[in-house]
Length: 213
Image (cartoon, rainbow, N blue to C red; front, top):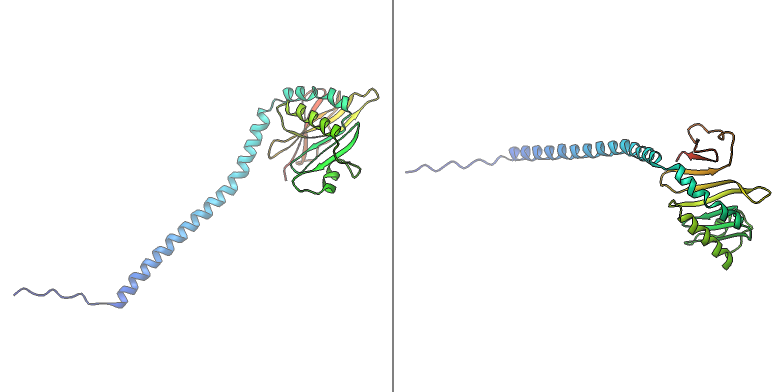
């Protein structure tokens, strides 16, 4: 007669031990995953600034400063014709201060007072048709430079009406770059260590860079 195999005796303590081991392995696995995520975030926080700085270096190295200033200088006759002192065109506000007066217009729900302040002062008026046409004329001329120039400021003229100083703000992402026209300047402006610095382009133009906070 065949022997009946012995039934394995149920052991609650053994089952609890197995469940504890499974829980411990799961806990170690979750801790490992959290540790890996933390290491990834730490590495990303370290690499992103380096990556952005590298992009900035590549951007500076690839710029055609001479070509840029040649195209910008072609705008001077229009500035002289319209007597433009300031031009401002951002997503939230646009404005122009020129021979006919100071005009501004808030965009996308921004306040007219805030727009007026950034466009040159509290004496700005709403755009009329001639001002709008002149603003668009200058805007198209700026677009033709193949650069995104959102601000032209500090334009000054001599007694003959020729531009003797002008600052063109270039939109280039994470940068604050300005092309400054100052014919026959003697020396570059004083730098602010680590914040604002200047680079000579030629006898009439220099570049101003400002640190991005």
